[in-house]
Length: 102
Image 1 (cartoon, rainbow, N blue to C red):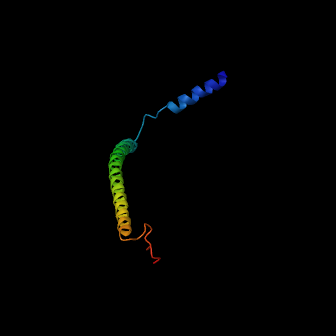
Image 2: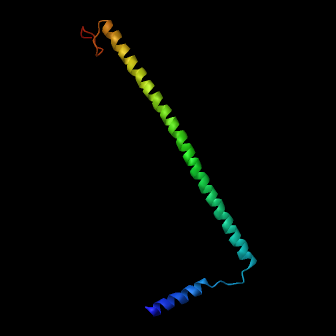
Image 3: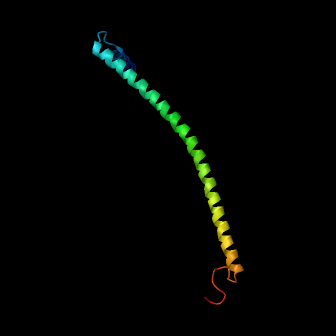
């Protein structure tokens, strides 16, 4: 077990050693990578904010559409009831057929 442990320590030291000499191009690349990651983080946060904002707006519009649907069904029911009353009032029957068989 001690032998495995010492190999792990050696591997950790090997991977943690950092080269001191870095080129100017690699430093610029690291800065560019950090900038891109920052832009992505801000864009992701903005996307989440917009999704939440529009979700609330969509819920409001859905409620309004439901209100209009109920009103239209109410108007259709009222119109059908008036049609039945007019037909019955003229001597017809409720299903729209004439009592004389026609």
